[in-house]
Image (cartoon, rainbow, N blue to C red; front, side, top):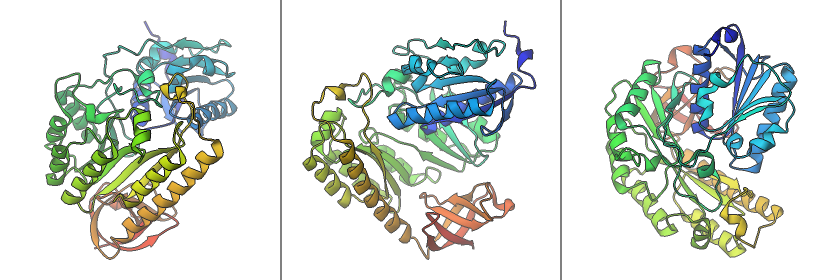
Length: 438
């Protein structure tokens, strides 16, 4: 039996690295700990327990993990430090070498965190609990409530794709999900806590239903029926899984916003083959064309990785040319870093760090140009915004249905309400359109 009396009046702080999925899971872990007696405090405060949920997508993510651990230890050298998440699952021995870490939990173990905390005793060397994830079939539902306006809802976990550059299947296991019915219950629970906008998250959300003989289209059709949720957004979805039927449904729905986040990763078919992606540039172009035909004002964000092993100068030129003509709103540019145990390490033609940096800068400039043009299209038009609660020097922010960031004078009465606004001018410093209430 766990002696939960140990946890009462103890303060716990949380820090999340990486994706929206991690944020949803950290929120669930925090709720579990609070149910067992902990009080949640900000990560910048002195706490009795620090929980760091990690990412391992890039080398930079791992460096940020180490920095967060060191920060926690500086704030309270006597605190009990827990490290979990993808980095902890894949490379626990690396984390164990960091002085001050007490507990390392893998991708599944983190959901039973209080069972591993013991009496919060620091023993000088960390305990490691990381089970085999490869054939894991259990799905742990999660959702985040960072503020009461927007919610990240985990609908799927794991991935069966095994792209050559990626460690995520090794860190999170096979694709799995809850049933549509149980996912609806989670959404309703988030709505009961005040969520009005839900962002659907996962590792490969378009693969939803693989473990329950359902489909992602089945899911969004049912979510669309929940009256108390006003808005849904779909986080990153693979282009081969973003079917014309899904796009058509989103175009007809009044709740699913005209906002897409689609990983391209490269505009070179040669590099896509090296990456072992499941589509080519022709299919990606078709998806963009379909969106623009049905939802001409949609925001489309595109992931792209530069500097992967085997990406020649011509391959990058092809990527730049493809992206230049592609009618999208923003590029999310990632610089490739070698990940242990990935197939990409077998490619014998690496790109120098200097060239990787240069290619990243080129695509960031292209992204800025596209986003600026997209925002300016909507100056002197009207839209509907869902303002969020943070007071930022007298201003508040929210997003239009097509994901344009909007700036308004702060008014607490507007939080978590839909407001009709006129879009006035582009505040480039804030990357937002200034607006006034209609």
